[in-house]
Structure formats: C-alpha cells, structure tokens
Length: 179
Image (cartoon, rainbow, N blue to C red; front, side):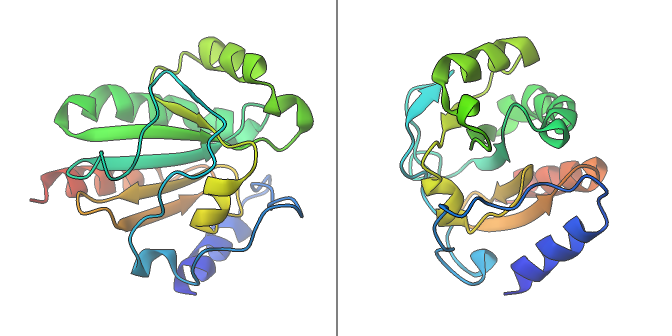
C-alpha cells in the first residue's frame, strides 16, 4: 500500500506524468511490492540485446528494472541517465533491464522496438512485455518507472517519472556497496 502511495505522490507533481496502465493490464500481484521478493520477468514476448534473463540467475547483482516505451517522451528523457548508470556500474554489479511495455499498438512491433533501441543507443537487455505480464506482476501503473532490486532479490527502491536522478544513483551506489 505504501509503495502505491509513494508512486502516486511522486507522479502527482509531474506536468506530463507517466500514463496509467491500459484497461487490459492485470491487477497487481501484491499490495506492497517492497514487502516481497521482486517478481520474476513474466510473459516476455522477446528479449533484445540479450538471451532471456531471470531474476533468479541475477541474484547477487543489483538490478534496475526500467519500465519504458519508445514513444513516451518522459521515458526518452530518462534514457541518458539509465544509459549512464549502465555504463558506469555494469562492471561493479549493476544489471539494467529495460522492460518495454507498449502504450500504443505500433509499439508492440519488435522491428519498431529494435529500431528505437538502435536510435537511442541502448546496449543493455530489453524485455518486450507486450502482454503486460511483467508490468502486472510489479503492480506498475506508470511510464517511466524504476525498480531497484537488491542482491537478495528484493525491491529496495522505486521511482516514477523523470527527475531525482542523483537520488536514484545514490540508491544504486548504496545497494552495490552492500554485502
């Protein structure tokens, strides 16, 4: 419940806030995502820039799950920070996974997603979540949304929308420093 309140409060102040999930998205898996282990990637249509990944195989690493879609201006605005974190911390134990969850039908086309990945210079793994299965597992409602998963597989930090990049980076550094 508290995580949802934090998300809503973070989003309320944004002029061009991230969109709310379409009607076909399933209900959240839990009322408070931070109280539980991070949900596994579910229902992924295609993995781009990577073989299929699981959170179980990423245990021991810090994982940044970035819910985004290529036609979302807010999402595009966060990409320089996400790409920077990936470049700066990938050799220190951070794994960035972009979960591309489309808002519009043309964003479901894998070729369009691949072209966007190339255009934006994204080199980290991208999971194409056309059926909103991973989105629903996280109880996510916004684009963009970050979920930082600690080395033990728990969601340790969330952020919705643009901004607070220094705060998010500090959370990454803190989680990487933990044993």
